[in-house]
Amino acid sequence: MTRFKQSLLNLSLKNKLIIAFSCFIITSFFIIGGTLSWLYFKSNKEMILDATEKNNKQIINNIDNSLNPLLRLSMYPLQDKELLQILRKDYSTVPYPKLEVSQDFDNVNQIIKNSMLLNTDLIESIVIYQDHNRLIIGRSNTDLINNTYFENEFMKEPYIQEILQKKGLAVSIGVHPDKLMTSNNRMVISIGRSIIDPNTYDNLGLILINIDIDKLKSVWSNTNFTENTKFYLIDESEHVIYSPNSSQIGQASSIIGEETKHSTNYIITSSSKVTNWKAVTIIPKNELFHVLDFMFKTIIISLLVLLVLAIFTSIRIATSVTKPLAILQRKMKRVSQGDMNVVIDIQHGEVGKISITIDHMLEDIRGLIQRIYEEETEKRRLESLALQSQIKPHFIYNTINVIKWMARIQGSTGIEEALTDFSSIIKFTTKTESEYTTFQEEVDFITSYTRILDFRYLNKFEVSYDIEPNILQYKTLKFLIQPIVENAVFHGFDGVDYKGKLLIHIYNQGDNVVVVVSDNGRGMSMLEQDTLDSKETVDQFNSIGIKNVRKRVELYFGEGYGLWIDSKENEGTKVTIIVPILKNEYSGDKE
Figure 1 (cartoon, rainbow, N blue to C red):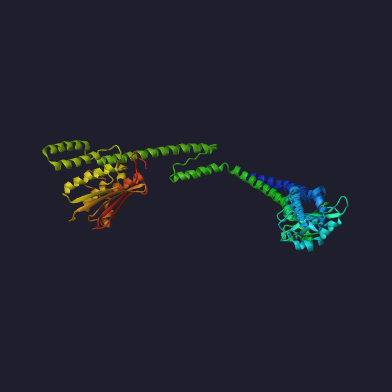
Figure 2: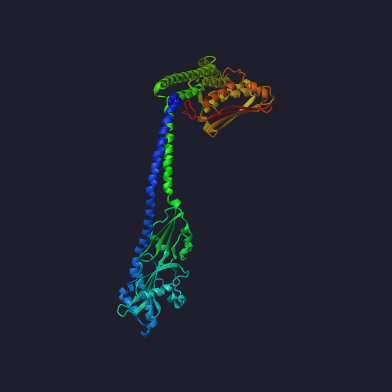
């Protein structure tokens, strides 16, 4: 015992809490769960059986309440003087018997329609039979009647004989086929009464009220206490009036005998004092108490959930100290992997103070990185300006303008045009306020640049342009095309014995602008292409080079944009540049 106690004392706080919570919940589970389950089963079992029996009795009461008005309605022929007078007639004594019968038939049918059928929706049909002349003097269904059945079998039916024997008392007739007024012998139940003359006590005939079995079902509520509950309505002669299986209607009640033999079913029976009919409800025991089983399982599951929650709570308490340290370690690992946007954001405890310090440190590092980035960007811009400003461009531009005016005064047109183009080039290179220019300005610059080269090489090549007009307004990087043109003239047309042709094609492709510079020069081998990026151009107006163009495009516009060369020896060269569409309002970020 001492050793066990010592073992408990040596446990960590986390394990002690887990054991304490587990013992408490398990004890509660057996005490509370067992007691509640026993009380619940005891009280609810009797309540469910009582509710089932009451429902059965209520169905019988509903049927009786629905049939009582029909029993009273069967007295109507004795209360209507006109109808009673018609039942007393002897048509053999009237001058025109057929006409008299026809008129009386119409009158009785009108009485049935206006005074009897409107009392309830349960009535399928009404038949009024006159005994003296042995004819049907009125019926609700005027379209169909089985005359053969009426003449030979109707009065012999056991239920008709029972009605006549009762001498004016109401008779409830169980399920039977309606052979008189239906073509398919539809199953009905009926209320019948013989009509006795109140003065002479002679039998004047009878009234038969047929009730639709399907309509009768509307007088009781849902009987399905469980999924497999079965409800039957049995008439006074032990025939089935209603069954879940419609094929059993009209058959002897012995067909349900097999189900009543099993001890696994509860059988509840209620009888009617008006009709002697019986309502039988058969409920499987296991389904009747399914709800109780479900509640018991729910209690067990709930207690188990509480047990799990208690254990989980104890674990949470034990780990509440170590969790912040784990978070700090995981986020610092992300920092070590280069993610400087991590926010530790632990607010409580000693670890929270450490996290606040680290957050301030990371914020300072991010600011330092941003400053370095801005300084490097400015450095690249200044380097580009330095490349464009090898000598004082404004001094050159002003000097060339003086020489151009001197050439114009002296009538030297060729010199003037060359100086004009050269002046445009110098003017373009002096624009240092932005890395960007419009395609229109870039094309104008290339036009002046190629004319200068044409003067230099004495019509050695020609340049053609294929540019979509709407593109000229878009912006692009300065000196984007010039290094390509320079490479084509100095390298592609060098040493060829034919006139070089240079095509500059600029077009729109989706959200991008594609610039294609192609020539018919001598082309390049794969070795020359590999070494081309490392060469430096010799023209002092632009020493940026193809390698510089490719890197600038990738740097400014990112992945998916750049410069590609397609060249073969003696087959010319095609250089393709892809940049995004930049509107005139563009100030540094892609559209």
